[in-house]
Image (cartoon, rainbow, N blue to C red):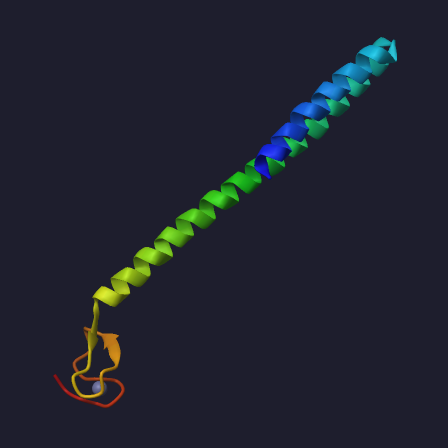
Length: 99
Ligand SMILES: [Zn+2]
């Protein structure tokens, strides 16, 4: 998706340039050329936003996985009812068993 957007950006600026050359007048050339550049800039901006989003999702997923793993490591199992809970608690929140 991101590569496609970058491809569109290059294509649009090239098309603007080519149409500009074949338009025959200097004013139209600049019009097409600038139009192509502006649209290409929008495509590049969109691609960069998507890139950032994918990076943020990756960071969040690693963070969540790390957090879940840490949670499992710091939990303890009640010997009375076998439920998992925070190891800092002095008694089981499910059955009230005291350590
Ligand atoms: Zn318990």
